[in-house]
Length: 484
Figure (cartoon, rainbow, N blue to C red):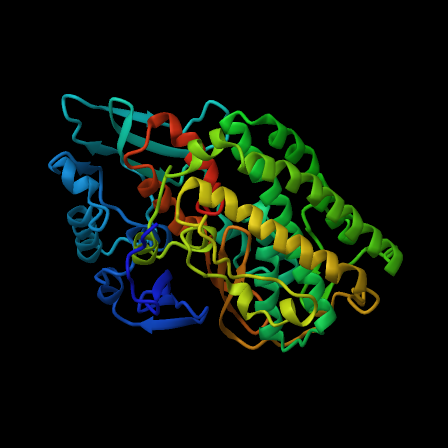
């Protein structure tokens, strides 16, 4: 499939935030996995920067534009993939500058012009399964989605307030609950910040053990998602197997740290393994994981060679590389379009101990639902091979003193700290402003779902309304990660 030519070094804004009325910050990613933070004292520079997606501003700083009225827009303007709602976005940015509204996420409703041959279809925020606190407004002609508008923020948990002024050990349980399917990724990001501020150096053994936990988290979710997508198509052999064998990596996680989701295992300066681990047990865990993967692989390859499944997934919900780049989509969404965004390339231990292939040059990755299905298999395979090579050689005796080193730190280096960890969805971003006692003065958290919800909006344009659940599952985005 032909892909548009784009600037290979075009950076994108991954987050914006303000910790005071006169200081605003942008987090910038580039294709070399470099992350930088830019400071501005002028709010206008943040809001008028057209390269910052409105989804990022809405999540980070809030918008108060009253009821969103798109009734004056011609349908063609709504469908222009390179100029999405541009006039309305300009009006929203202008209203922010005029009234100075900050952190007001109130959703006032939306009006969309519906042609006489079409209809508007609303889903949520109360879902039939009480699982999805989001509002989805579809404009549909016949069975074809013309455009989709998603608004979130209906299950606010107050994470920022809950962690404010708290010390590290009290913060970590909240960090692990930001999006609980990414508990290890968030815990790693928070702990790296505390280690920087406290001046704690950690050993390679601790770093390696944490990466094993991170990959087990990725493996478990990818197996579950492969099954969920297969189930949505009605291919039950893969669904049934993945539903049970997802428990294999979770079981390995529990055997390592006592929690199936890797919680209460990572602390500043240490990682706490179970006391009964030994080389023989680690070897057995690796063997169990590989056995489960081989079972999943057999069924996946069987499914992948099924023409019905290919017909259902291929060319469904396609996002081009250009769209991904222009909108700053991240993680799996970017990689499934053929881009190579992966912060794990910056982690030297991935190839110092074992070897993991993080660049997938594959003709099957061109941005559609099939690509998001197939990429999960590619990443699953690489992660399993790496973990099974590294796991038996882990040195677990020196990982923890069981004394919580962080409690012995009396003086932290005050400042603003940024960390990013490549979770299974993509990079989780955490910015903490800490005082000299290690307490959080201000915080900013950006889940990879924040920019990628807009990717779902764009992917379903021109698709059948009946294909929305399939596309939605192919992204598997987090409501909790958005609605902090």
